[in-house]
Image 1 (cartoon, rainbow, N blue to C red):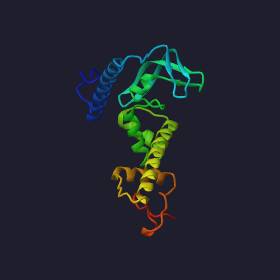
Image 2: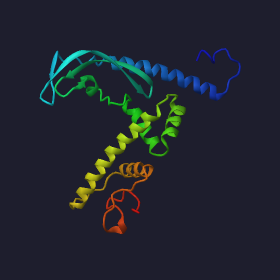
Image 3: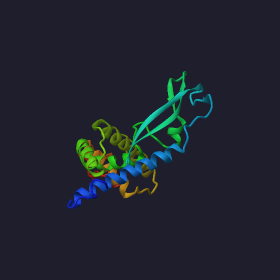
Image 4: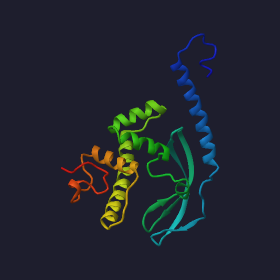
Length: 207
C-alpha cells in the first residue's frame, strides 16, 4: 500500500498486485499465529508404536509448510522408534500435515491444475495466480498421490458394482479419475458389456 500512496498515477494491475501481496502477508502472519496455538505436540518421553515397539522423544524439529498464504514454520515434538526405524510427530497428525510439506489447500489447488495440464504448466499457473512457487517434482508427487487415492476408490467402487450394489460415484470423482488416467495415457478398468465401458460410466471406452 505504501508504494501506491503518493503516486499520482498507477494502473489497476499495479494496485491489484500490491493489495494482493499485502493481503497475503497479513494472512500468512495470522495463519502462523493460529498454528502456533496448537502447541508442539509433546506427549511425554515415550509413546507406544503400532509395530509394538516404543517411540522415544528425540527433540523438537521445525517443519516448513507451504500454504495458500505462503510459508509457515511449525516446531514439533519428534519421536523415533528403534524397532521399525520410523519417525513420528504427533502434531503432524493433529494438524493433518502430510509428507509433502504442503497444506491441504495447496495440495487441492495443485492437484486440480495438474489434472488439466502438464505438471510444469500447473506449477507456473499456480505461481501466477497466488504468487507462490512449487517445484516440478512436488507437483508430480501431489498429483500421483491424489491419483492413487482416486484409483483405489474407483477400484473398490467397481468391485461393489459387480457385487450388485447400485453405486454411482459423485461426478467430481468420476471426472477426476478420468483426468488422472488421461494424463497418464491409461484407461479406466475395461469391463465386459455396455460397449466395453466401465459400468460406473467414469471414463471413455477402452482401446
